[in-house]
Length: 469
Image (cartoon, rainbow, N blue to C red; front, top):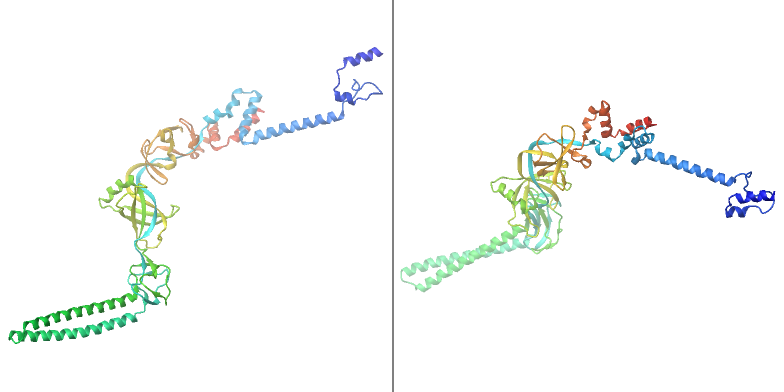
Protein backbone atom coordinates (compact mmCIF):
# COMPACT_ATOMS: atom_id res chain seq x y z
CA UNK A 1 0.00 0.00 0.00
CA UNK A 2 2.82 2.38 0.77
CA UNK A 3 4.53 1.59 -2.50
CA UNK A 4 1.30 2.22 -4.49
CA UNK A 5 0.77 5.61 -2.82
CA UNK A 6 4.37 6.55 -3.46
CA UNK A 7 4.04 5.63 -7.11
CA UNK A 8 0.92 7.79 -7.60
CA UNK A 9 2.61 10.77 -6.02
CA UNK A 10 5.71 10.48 -8.18
CA UNK A 11 3.68 10.05 -11.40
CA UNK A 12 1.48 13.12 -10.72
CA UNK A 13 2.81 16.46 -12.09
CA UNK A 14 4.01 18.88 -9.50
CA UNK A 15 1.45 21.41 -8.42
CA UNK A 16 2.23 25.12 -8.44
CA UNK A 17 3.88 26.52 -5.39
CA UNK A 18 0.81 28.54 -4.58
CA UNK A 19 -1.39 25.46 -4.72
CA UNK A 20 1.05 23.40 -2.70
CA UNK A 21 1.07 25.98 -0.06
CA UNK A 22 -2.71 25.92 0.14
CA UNK A 23 -3.04 22.11 0.50
CA UNK A 24 -3.83 20.79 3.95
CA UNK A 25 -0.93 19.17 5.72
CA UNK A 26 -2.98 16.51 7.49
CA UNK A 27 -6.14 14.50 7.22
CA UNK A 28 -7.62 12.70 4.19
CA UNK A 29 -5.93 11.83 0.90
CA UNK A 30 -3.76 14.12 -1.18
CA UNK A 31 -5.46 17.21 -2.61
CA UNK A 32 -6.02 17.40 -6.35
CA UNK A 33 -6.39 13.66 -6.75
CA UNK A 34 -8.46 12.12 -9.46
CA UNK A 35 -11.58 12.24 -7.41
CA UNK A 36 -11.32 15.90 -6.33
CA UNK A 37 -13.73 18.60 -7.91
CA UNK A 38 -12.48 21.81 -9.77
CA UNK A 39 -12.16 25.08 -7.84
CA UNK A 40 -15.44 27.19 -8.09
CA UNK A 41 -13.43 30.44 -8.37
CA UNK A 42 -11.65 29.11 -11.45
CA UNK A 43 -14.93 28.16 -13.08
CA UNK A 44 -16.43 31.66 -12.41
CA UNK A 45 -13.34 33.44 -13.79
CA UNK A 46 -13.32 31.35 -16.95
CA UNK A 47 -16.99 32.09 -17.54
CA UNK A 48 -16.36 35.86 -17.23
CA UNK A 49 -13.49 35.72 -19.72
CA UNK A 50 -15.66 33.83 -22.22
CA UNK A 51 -18.46 36.42 -21.89
CA UNK A 52 -16.05 39.32 -22.41
CA UNK A 53 -14.56 37.70 -25.52
CA UNK A 54 -18.03 37.06 -26.94
CA UNK A 55 -19.10 40.67 -26.31
CA UNK A 56 -15.97 41.99 -28.03
CA UNK A 57 -16.60 39.77 -31.04
CA UNK A 58 -20.21 40.96 -31.33
CA UNK A 59 -19.13 44.61 -30.96
CA UNK A 60 -16.47 44.18 -33.65
CA UNK A 61 -19.00 42.69 -36.06
CA UNK A 62 -21.45 45.55 -35.44
CA UNK A 63 -18.76 48.20 -35.95
CA UNK A 64 -17.49 46.48 -39.08
CA UNK A 65 -20.96 46.39 -40.64
CA UNK A 66 -22.14 49.89 -39.76
CA UNK A 67 -19.03 52.12 -39.46
CA UNK A 68 -18.13 54.18 -42.59
CA UNK A 69 -14.90 52.24 -43.18
CA UNK A 70 -16.75 48.96 -43.14
CA UNK A 71 -19.96 49.64 -45.08
CA UNK A 72 -22.55 47.07 -46.00
CA UNK A 73 -20.92 46.38 -49.30
CA UNK A 74 -17.59 45.66 -47.60
CA UNK A 75 -19.31 43.39 -45.10
CA UNK A 76 -21.07 41.58 -47.93
CA UNK A 77 -17.86 41.08 -49.85
CA UNK A 78 -16.09 39.87 -46.71
CA UNK A 79 -18.90 37.39 -46.06
CA UNK A 80 -18.80 36.22 -49.63
CA UNK A 81 -15.02 35.70 -49.37
CA UNK A 82 -15.39 33.81 -46.10
CA UNK A 83 -17.98 31.41 -47.55
CA UNK A 84 -15.60 30.54 -50.42
CA UNK A 85 -18.38 30.70 -53.01
CA UNK A 86 -16.42 32.98 -55.30
CA UNK A 87 -12.93 34.08 -54.23
CA UNK A 88 -12.81 36.74 -56.98
CA UNK A 89 -15.75 38.61 -55.46
CA UNK A 90 -13.84 39.30 -52.26
CA UNK A 91 -11.83 42.13 -53.80
CA UNK A 92 -14.80 43.93 -55.32
CA UNK A 93 -15.01 46.39 -52.40
CA UNK A 94 -11.27 47.21 -52.41
CA UNK A 95 -9.34 50.17 -53.69
CA UNK A 96 -9.27 48.83 -57.24
CA UNK A 97 -13.05 48.65 -57.39
CA UNK A 98 -13.37 52.24 -56.11
CA UNK A 99 -10.92 53.42 -58.75
CA UNK A 100 -12.92 51.75 -61.53
CA UNK A 101 -16.28 52.89 -60.17
CA UNK A 102 -18.10 55.60 -62.17
CA UNK A 103 -17.76 58.93 -60.34
CA UNK A 104 -20.76 61.30 -60.04
CA UNK A 105 -19.95 64.75 -61.40
CA UNK A 106 -21.68 67.91 -62.58
CA UNK A 107 -20.98 69.18 -66.08
CA UNK A 108 -21.63 72.30 -68.14
CA UNK A 109 -21.57 72.99 -71.85
CA UNK A 110 -19.07 75.45 -73.30
CA UNK A 111 -20.93 78.30 -74.98
CA UNK A 112 -19.98 80.96 -77.47
CA UNK A 113 -20.78 84.62 -76.94
CA UNK A 114 -19.47 88.03 -75.95
CA UNK A 115 -16.90 88.20 -73.19
CA UNK A 116 -16.27 91.59 -71.56
CA UNK A 117 -12.70 92.49 -70.66
CA UNK A 118 -13.14 93.94 -67.19
CA UNK A 119 -10.52 95.37 -64.82
CA UNK A 120 -11.50 95.25 -61.16
CA UNK A 121 -9.96 97.44 -58.47
CA UNK A 122 -10.67 98.89 -55.06
CA UNK A 123 -11.54 102.58 -55.22
CA UNK A 124 -12.39 105.50 -52.96
CA UNK A 125 -15.32 107.83 -53.51
CA UNK A 126 -13.88 111.33 -53.83
CA UNK A 127 -16.01 114.48 -54.22
CA UNK A 128 -15.20 116.82 -57.08
CA UNK A 129 -15.43 119.75 -54.65
CA UNK A 130 -14.93 119.80 -50.90
CA UNK A 131 -15.06 123.42 -49.67
CA UNK A 132 -14.48 124.78 -46.19
CA UNK A 133 -16.56 127.97 -45.86
CA UNK A 134 -14.47 130.69 -44.18
CA UNK A 135 -15.48 134.27 -43.44
CA UNK A 136 -13.65 136.80 -45.59
CA UNK A 137 -13.84 139.58 -43.04
CA UNK A 138 -13.99 139.97 -39.29
CA UNK A 139 -17.17 140.52 -37.37
CA UNK A 140 -19.85 139.09 -35.16
CA UNK A 141 -21.77 136.15 -36.63
CA UNK A 142 -25.39 137.26 -36.43
CA UNK A 143 -27.39 134.48 -38.08
CA UNK A 144 -26.93 130.98 -39.55
CA UNK A 145 -29.47 130.09 -42.25
CA UNK A 146 -28.60 126.47 -42.98
CA UNK A 147 -29.39 123.18 -41.26
CA UNK A 148 -26.77 120.53 -40.74
CA UNK A 149 -26.87 117.95 -43.53
CA UNK A 150 -28.92 120.20 -45.80
CA UNK A 151 -28.49 120.17 -49.57
CA UNK A 152 -27.70 123.68 -50.77
CA UNK A 153 -27.19 125.25 -54.16
CA UNK A 154 -24.47 127.61 -55.25
CA UNK A 155 -25.29 131.17 -54.10
CA UNK A 156 -27.60 130.21 -51.22
CA UNK A 157 -27.10 132.39 -48.11
CA UNK A 158 -25.49 130.40 -45.30
CA UNK A 159 -24.75 133.01 -42.61
CA UNK A 160 -24.74 136.75 -41.90
CA UNK A 161 -21.98 138.79 -40.27
CA UNK A 162 -22.88 142.12 -38.62
CA UNK A 163 -22.71 144.59 -41.57
CA UNK A 164 -23.04 147.86 -39.65
CA UNK A 165 -19.33 148.73 -39.33
CA UNK A 166 -18.84 148.23 -43.05
CA UNK A 167 -21.97 150.22 -43.88
CA UNK A 168 -20.60 153.17 -41.89
CA UNK A 169 -17.25 152.92 -43.64
CA UNK A 170 -19.04 152.91 -46.98
CA UNK A 171 -20.95 156.08 -46.18
CA UNK A 172 -17.77 157.80 -45.01
CA UNK A 173 -16.03 156.88 -48.26
CA UNK A 174 -18.95 158.19 -50.27
CA UNK A 175 -18.74 161.55 -48.45
CA UNK A 176 -15.02 161.81 -49.13
CA UNK A 177 -15.67 161.08 -52.78
CA UNK A 178 -18.26 163.85 -53.04
CA UNK A 179 -15.86 166.38 -51.53
CA UNK A 180 -12.99 165.41 -53.79
CA UNK A 181 -15.25 165.50 -56.84
CA UNK A 182 -16.23 169.09 -55.97
CA UNK A 183 -12.56 170.09 -55.64
CA UNK A 184 -11.82 168.44 -58.97
CA UNK A 185 -14.64 170.36 -60.64
CA UNK A 186 -13.33 173.69 -59.28
CA UNK A 187 -9.79 172.91 -60.39
CA UNK A 188 -10.98 172.11 -63.90
CA UNK A 189 -12.88 175.46 -64.15
CA UNK A 190 -9.80 177.40 -62.97
CA UNK A 191 -7.66 175.57 -65.49
CA UNK A 192 -10.06 176.54 -68.26
CA UNK A 193 -9.90 180.26 -67.23
CA UNK A 194 -6.09 180.16 -67.01
CA UNK A 195 -5.85 178.67 -70.47
CA UNK A 196 -8.02 181.56 -71.84
CA UNK A 197 -5.84 184.17 -70.16
CA UNK A 198 -2.70 182.46 -71.42
CA UNK A 199 -4.05 182.71 -74.95
CA UNK A 200 -4.45 186.49 -74.41
CA UNK A 201 -0.91 186.58 -72.99
CA UNK A 202 -2.33 187.87 -69.72
CA UNK A 203 -0.93 185.15 -67.41
CA UNK A 204 2.27 183.24 -67.06
CA UNK A 205 2.39 179.74 -68.49
CA UNK A 206 3.81 178.43 -65.21
CA UNK A 207 0.54 179.18 -63.44
CA UNK A 208 -1.38 177.28 -66.10
CA UNK A 209 0.87 174.26 -65.75
CA UNK A 210 0.48 174.27 -61.98
CA UNK A 211 -3.29 174.36 -62.29
CA UNK A 212 -3.20 171.45 -64.75
CA UNK A 213 -1.19 169.38 -62.26
CA UNK A 214 -3.72 170.20 -59.54
CA UNK A 215 -6.51 168.88 -61.74
CA UNK A 216 -4.62 165.63 -62.25
CA UNK A 217 -4.11 165.34 -58.51
CA UNK A 218 -7.81 165.72 -57.79
CA UNK A 219 -8.65 163.14 -60.47
CA UNK A 220 -6.41 160.64 -58.70
CA UNK A 221 -8.00 161.40 -55.37
CA UNK A 222 -11.45 160.83 -56.82
CA UNK A 223 -10.39 157.43 -58.21
CA UNK A 224 -8.99 156.45 -54.84
CA UNK A 225 -12.23 157.47 -53.14
CA UNK A 226 -14.19 155.37 -55.65
CA UNK A 227 -12.00 152.39 -54.92
CA UNK A 228 -12.65 152.77 -51.21
CA UNK A 229 -16.36 152.82 -51.89
CA UNK A 230 -16.11 149.64 -53.97
CA UNK A 231 -14.13 147.98 -51.19
CA UNK A 232 -16.73 148.71 -48.56
CA UNK A 233 -19.51 147.58 -50.88
CA UNK A 234 -17.64 144.31 -51.34
CA UNK A 235 -17.31 143.99 -47.57
CA UNK A 236 -21.08 144.26 -47.31
CA UNK A 237 -21.34 141.43 -49.85
CA UNK A 238 -18.86 139.34 -47.89
CA UNK A 239 -20.89 139.97 -44.74
CA UNK A 240 -23.53 137.71 -46.31
CA UNK A 241 -21.79 134.31 -46.54
CA UNK A 242 -23.11 132.29 -49.48
CA UNK A 243 -22.47 128.74 -50.71
CA UNK A 244 -19.57 128.68 -53.18
CA UNK A 245 -20.65 125.29 -54.64
CA UNK A 246 -23.71 123.09 -54.67
CA UNK A 247 -23.61 120.14 -52.30
CA UNK A 248 -24.33 118.95 -48.82
CA UNK A 249 -23.35 120.94 -45.75
CA UNK A 250 -21.76 119.18 -42.83
CA UNK A 251 -21.85 119.93 -39.12
CA UNK A 252 -21.85 123.58 -38.02
CA UNK A 253 -18.49 124.61 -36.61
CA UNK A 254 -19.41 128.07 -35.22
CA UNK A 255 -22.55 129.18 -33.44
CA UNK A 256 -24.19 132.59 -33.89
CA UNK A 257 -22.85 135.27 -31.59
CA UNK A 258 -19.20 134.34 -31.99
CA UNK A 259 -16.68 136.80 -33.38
CA UNK A 260 -15.25 135.29 -36.53
CA UNK A 261 -12.17 136.18 -38.54
CA UNK A 262 -10.72 135.06 -41.88
CA UNK A 263 -8.16 132.99 -39.95
CA UNK A 264 -10.86 130.77 -38.42
CA UNK A 265 -9.34 127.29 -38.10
CA UNK A 266 -12.25 125.02 -39.04
CA UNK A 267 -14.36 127.57 -40.89
CA UNK A 268 -18.08 127.89 -40.44
CA UNK A 269 -19.12 124.71 -42.28
CA UNK A 270 -17.85 122.29 -44.94
CA UNK A 271 -19.75 121.77 -48.20
CA UNK A 272 -19.19 118.56 -50.15
CA UNK A 273 -20.35 118.18 -53.72
CA UNK A 274 -22.25 114.91 -54.24
CA UNK A 275 -23.73 115.31 -57.70
CA UNK A 276 -21.72 114.51 -59.70
CA UNK A 277 -19.11 112.65 -57.68
CA UNK A 278 -15.99 110.74 -58.63
CA UNK A 279 -14.23 107.51 -57.69
CA UNK A 280 -10.45 107.28 -57.73
CA UNK A 281 -8.99 103.79 -58.20
CA UNK A 282 -5.72 102.29 -59.35
CA UNK A 283 -4.76 99.71 -61.95
CA UNK A 284 -1.53 98.01 -62.87
CA UNK A 285 0.76 99.64 -65.38
CA UNK A 286 0.40 96.47 -67.48
CA UNK A 287 -3.20 97.49 -68.24
CA UNK A 288 -2.28 101.03 -69.21
CA UNK A 289 -1.76 100.39 -72.92
CA UNK A 290 -5.15 98.84 -73.61
CA UNK A 291 -6.84 101.67 -71.67
CA UNK A 292 -4.96 104.32 -73.62
CA UNK A 293 -5.84 102.63 -76.93
CA UNK A 294 -9.51 103.10 -76.11
CA UNK A 295 -9.36 106.60 -74.62
CA UNK A 296 -7.19 108.06 -77.39
CA UNK A 297 -9.89 107.20 -79.92
CA UNK A 298 -12.41 109.24 -77.92
CA UNK A 299 -14.26 106.25 -76.47
CA UNK A 300 -15.93 106.66 -73.08
CA UNK A 301 -15.13 103.57 -71.02
CA UNK A 302 -17.89 102.36 -68.72
CA UNK A 303 -17.19 102.04 -64.99
CA UNK A 304 -19.50 100.39 -62.45
CA UNK A 305 -19.18 100.84 -58.69
CA UNK A 306 -20.10 97.95 -56.38
CA UNK A 307 -20.39 97.79 -52.62
CA UNK A 308 -17.75 96.29 -50.30
CA UNK A 309 -19.12 92.76 -50.77
CA UNK A 310 -18.79 93.22 -54.55
CA UNK A 311 -22.33 91.95 -55.09
CA UNK A 312 -24.60 95.01 -55.30
CA UNK A 313 -24.21 97.57 -58.07
CA UNK A 314 -24.37 101.10 -56.66
CA UNK A 315 -23.90 103.40 -59.65
CA UNK A 316 -22.68 103.44 -63.23
CA UNK A 317 -20.42 106.09 -64.70
CA UNK A 318 -17.63 106.74 -67.17
CA UNK A 319 -13.87 107.02 -67.00
CA UNK A 320 -12.94 110.69 -66.83
CA UNK A 321 -9.16 110.83 -66.86
CA UNK A 322 -5.88 109.18 -65.88
CA UNK A 323 -3.05 110.48 -63.76
CA UNK A 324 -0.01 111.88 -65.58
CA UNK A 325 2.52 109.48 -64.04
CA UNK A 326 2.93 105.96 -62.66
CA UNK A 327 3.60 105.42 -58.98
CA UNK A 328 7.06 103.85 -58.92
CA UNK A 329 6.58 102.31 -55.47
CA UNK A 330 3.52 100.26 -56.47
CA UNK A 331 3.70 100.15 -60.26
CA UNK A 332 0.14 101.45 -60.57
CA UNK A 333 -1.55 104.46 -62.11
CA UNK A 334 -4.53 106.37 -60.71
CA UNK A 335 -7.77 106.77 -62.64
CA UNK A 336 -10.81 108.95 -61.98
CA UNK A 337 -14.33 107.90 -62.91
CA UNK A 338 -17.30 110.29 -62.70
CA UNK A 339 -20.79 109.24 -61.55
CA UNK A 340 -23.94 111.37 -61.64
CA UNK A 341 -25.06 109.83 -58.33
CA UNK A 342 -28.73 110.89 -58.53
CA UNK A 343 -29.73 108.79 -55.50
CA UNK A 344 -26.66 109.68 -53.41
CA UNK A 345 -25.67 106.02 -53.10
CA UNK A 346 -22.02 106.99 -53.34
CA UNK A 347 -20.80 108.76 -50.22
CA UNK A 348 -17.50 110.66 -49.85
CA UNK A 349 -14.54 108.52 -48.68
CA UNK A 350 -16.57 105.33 -49.17
CA UNK A 351 -14.64 102.23 -50.29
CA UNK A 352 -16.15 100.62 -53.39
CA UNK A 353 -15.20 97.92 -55.88
CA UNK A 354 -14.90 99.28 -59.40
CA UNK A 355 -15.20 97.38 -62.66
CA UNK A 356 -13.77 99.10 -65.72
CA UNK A 357 -15.04 97.73 -69.03
CA UNK A 358 -12.06 98.01 -71.36
CA UNK A 359 -13.20 95.92 -74.33
CA UNK A 360 -15.60 93.16 -75.43
CA UNK A 361 -14.41 89.97 -77.13
CA UNK A 362 -16.80 88.71 -79.80
CA UNK A 363 -17.57 84.97 -80.32
CA UNK A 364 -15.52 83.84 -77.33
CA UNK A 365 -15.72 80.27 -75.96
CA UNK A 366 -16.99 80.61 -72.38
CA UNK A 367 -16.99 78.01 -69.59
CA UNK A 368 -17.72 78.28 -65.86
CA UNK A 369 -14.70 79.40 -63.88
CA UNK A 370 -14.88 76.28 -61.67
CA UNK A 371 -14.14 74.11 -64.72
CA UNK A 372 -10.63 75.53 -65.16
CA UNK A 373 -8.11 73.75 -62.90
CA UNK A 374 -4.41 74.29 -62.26
CA UNK A 375 -1.80 71.57 -62.15
CA UNK A 376 1.81 70.80 -62.96
CA UNK A 377 0.92 70.96 -66.64
CA UNK A 378 -0.68 74.38 -66.24
CA UNK A 379 -4.35 75.13 -66.69
CA UNK A 380 -6.57 72.27 -67.85
CA UNK A 381 -10.17 71.05 -67.89
CA UNK A 382 -11.86 67.65 -67.85
CA UNK A 383 -13.76 67.23 -71.13
CA UNK A 384 -16.61 64.69 -71.16
CA UNK A 385 -16.57 62.19 -74.04
CA UNK A 386 -19.73 60.68 -75.57
CA UNK A 387 -19.05 57.36 -73.74
CA UNK A 388 -19.23 59.15 -70.36
CA UNK A 389 -15.49 59.13 -69.78
CA UNK A 390 -13.32 62.16 -69.27
CA UNK A 391 -10.08 63.31 -70.83
CA UNK A 392 -7.62 65.90 -69.58
CA UNK A 393 -7.45 68.85 -71.96
CA UNK A 394 -4.82 71.62 -71.50
CA UNK A 395 -6.35 75.05 -72.13
CA UNK A 396 -5.26 78.65 -72.44
CA UNK A 397 -7.59 80.85 -70.46
CA UNK A 398 -8.53 84.37 -71.47
CA UNK A 399 -10.28 87.18 -69.57
CA UNK A 400 -12.32 86.22 -66.52
CA UNK A 401 -15.63 87.83 -65.60
CA UNK A 402 -16.61 86.56 -62.17
CA UNK A 403 -18.09 83.07 -62.63
CA UNK A 404 -17.28 82.94 -66.36
CA UNK A 405 -13.92 82.33 -68.01
CA UNK A 406 -13.12 82.65 -71.69
CA UNK A 407 -11.00 79.96 -73.32
CA UNK A 408 -8.57 81.02 -76.03
CA UNK A 409 -7.65 77.46 -77.05
CA UNK A 410 -8.29 73.88 -75.89
CA UNK A 411 -12.10 73.72 -75.79
CA UNK A 412 -14.66 74.12 -78.55
CA UNK A 413 -18.16 75.47 -78.18
CA UNK A 414 -20.64 72.68 -77.44
CA UNK A 415 -18.21 70.43 -75.56
CA UNK A 416 -19.09 69.44 -72.02
CA UNK A 417 -16.67 70.09 -69.17
CA UNK A 418 -16.69 68.95 -65.54
CA UNK A 419 -17.48 71.75 -63.09
CA UNK A 420 -17.87 69.74 -59.84
CA UNK A 421 -16.45 66.44 -58.59
CA UNK A 422 -13.18 66.67 -60.53
CA UNK A 423 -11.02 65.89 -57.47
CA UNK A 424 -11.68 62.14 -57.94
CA UNK A 425 -11.06 62.06 -61.68
CA UNK A 426 -8.14 61.05 -63.86
CA UNK A 427 -7.54 60.45 -67.56
CA UNK A 428 -10.15 58.04 -68.93
CA UNK A 429 -12.19 57.86 -65.70
CA UNK A 430 -15.82 56.85 -65.97
CA UNK A 431 -18.43 59.32 -64.77
CA UNK A 432 -22.13 59.51 -64.15
CA UNK A 433 -24.15 62.69 -64.37
CA UNK A 434 -27.06 63.13 -61.92
CA UNK A 435 -29.39 63.95 -64.80
CA UNK A 436 -28.49 60.62 -66.47
CA UNK A 437 -29.23 58.48 -63.40
CA UNK A 438 -32.91 57.64 -64.17
CA UNK A 439 -31.97 56.44 -67.66
CA UNK A 440 -29.32 54.04 -66.27
CA UNK A 441 -31.58 52.60 -63.59
CA UNK A 442 -33.14 49.89 -65.81
CA UNK A 443 -31.34 46.56 -66.19
CA UNK A 444 -28.76 44.85 -64.03
CA UNK A 445 -25.80 46.69 -65.51
CA UNK A 446 -27.54 50.02 -65.28
CA UNK A 447 -28.54 49.28 -61.72
CA UNK A 448 -24.96 48.63 -60.73
CA UNK A 449 -23.90 51.90 -62.37
CA UNK A 450 -26.65 53.77 -60.56
CA UNK A 451 -25.51 52.16 -57.33
CA UNK A 452 -21.99 53.49 -57.80
CA UNK A 453 -23.24 56.97 -58.72
CA UNK A 454 -26.04 57.60 -56.27
CA UNK A 455 -24.68 55.95 -53.16
CA UNK A 456 -27.21 53.08 -53.25
CA UNK A 457 -24.43 50.51 -52.88
CA UNK A 458 -25.62 49.90 -49.30
CA UNK A 459 -28.67 47.92 -50.53
CA UNK A 460 -26.54 46.10 -53.08
CA UNK A 461 -24.02 45.12 -50.39
CA UNK A 462 -26.82 43.97 -48.10
CA UNK A 463 -28.21 41.69 -50.79
CA UNK A 464 -24.71 40.28 -51.42
CA UNK A 465 -24.26 39.59 -47.72
CA UNK A 466 -27.57 37.77 -47.55
CA UNK A 467 -26.63 35.69 -50.59
CA UNK A 468 -23.26 34.72 -49.10
CA UNK A 469 -24.91 33.75 -45.84
